[in-house]
Amino acid sequence: MSRATTTGRNSTLRRGANGGTIGSRRGAFGQGAGFSVGTQPQEILGRDDIHARTEASERLLSKDELRRLSQMEKKDGKKLAKLLKEEARAEARAVAQSIADVGRLARLQKNAIEQERKSQRHLTKWTGREHRARLRFLKEKEKYERIEAELRNAENDFEERRDHAAGLTAQIAERTQEIDDMRAQKAADDRERALKLKALKNPAHS
Image 1 (tube, rainbow, N blue to C red):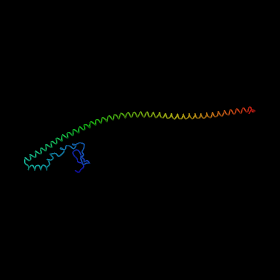
Image 2: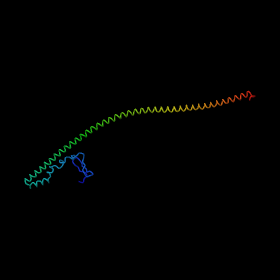
Image 3: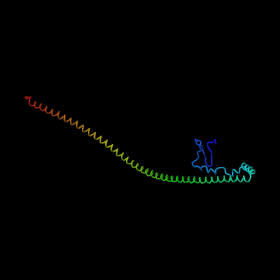
Image 4: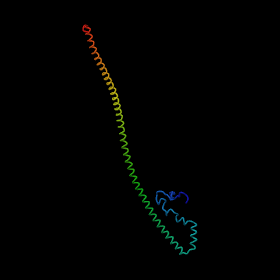
């Protein structure tokens, strides 16, 4: 067969890379039962060529020979019937196994749905908590930023007033030094002045 795919009952087969046939996941009976999907006996017997050959041969055979052939055909029929019954039991077991597998999957699905529901409740819970915490955080952040701004203003005001006070203190120290120098200078001048006055009053002693 040269085509890449062959179609069977209710399904499609495709050839794999190694030349094998890859079917669906439905297992051995995915294409139907092997013995029952083939050509039916009535289709064979209804063919004119087979029917003509059979009649022509039977006219030349004796009753004993025909009886022997009939018995052989009955034996073959019994063997095929046995195989059909065995296939039916195997197919029934396959169906039961598939149903059991689906049952297990259904239980897993039920558990997965419950776990998803629990996870969703957990997510909703912590989403709400995060939202409330974020609102509190933003409120406290705004409050902190106001306090921080007041602190910066207080620091700037303190630095300005400290620098101003230090400047005044430096000015006072400078003026005090000037006064001390002036007083010392005045003291010296007063004494020299007193000597001159004394000399002026007593010129003979000068």
